[in-house]
Length: 309
Ligand SMILES: [Zn+2]
Image (cartoon, rainbow, N blue to C red; front, side, top):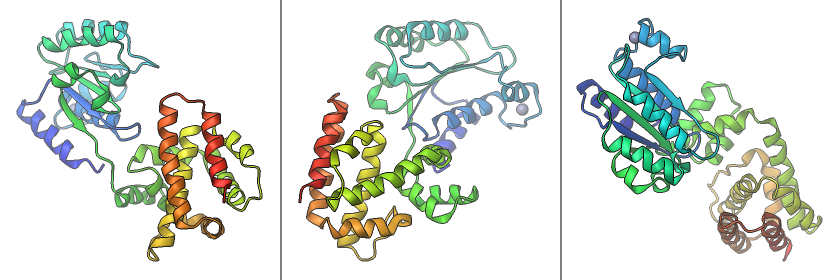
């Protein structure tokens, strides 16, 4: 969904037999890489995707002998590369191709990367390798150069809202998710199901309001936030952005408009220049977290900055 150009290009390639035999699908978790891979495999095995022939039925049941799906937990190791090599070495049984899907190639160990490279340099006939990664930048450049790279673009707010509305998600919730998921439908769907997430978000709104009003010990909240640092930072940033944009643009509709009364209360104690300073600090926090600083200290500083007048 939302990546029709990529799908069109792949379909044309498959129907004419002119496509790279190593495909790399890049995009953040939830952006549809696995769905796209499933779509490609389906078309490679049955161009009409008839759902009736042996290829279609075996694929649907997950027992097609010409399809190998490797999803590793953690790093992709040499044994995975070997498994893939062994699988591709034999010719296809019933399909026109042997297809292997190797997920999370941003986590390849050096040995696995080198082994994979050897396979891809001299791929067995009628074999197709589909690799996925969160970003092509995080994959060995030598692997990327041997692949046809398709980067899944973030979806527009409209596309995500539409997809959520089709699932009967209440409008205010779908508005928030469309803004908060940053164009990644899979992320929106995951959050939708996660009742604890909505509780954490509500709790955070209360905490931000009380810290800005200096009615709460900021270090207590930072203690909560550092448990899930990425999520806390995403929520806080979306909150601060709403506060900033609402103050400088009267037509702005906040992502968090379902919590408008909390936003209003926060804005009374946080003028635009403070929002900007805090957003700057959030960007720094993101970098600190990536360099493995202690999340507790980082969030302590952030909460104290919110508390300061
Ligand atoms: Zn079929």
